[in-house]
Image: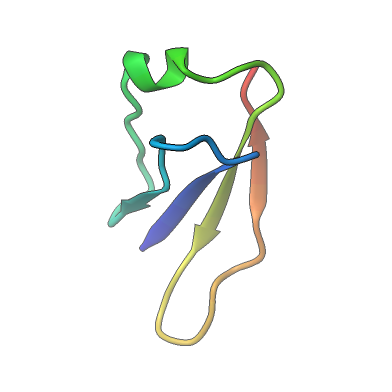
Length: 58
């Protein structure tokens, strides 16, 4: 499982849970984001979450 969150958070958008390493975010949700946001991606499992991977949205 993967958990994807916005940094900084935006009310009403995300976080997303995914069972595979693929994420589809609708154009309407992306249009709500101001410049400077990033995705924080963590793999979740039975023991602990992975360290975050940050992907800038430009």
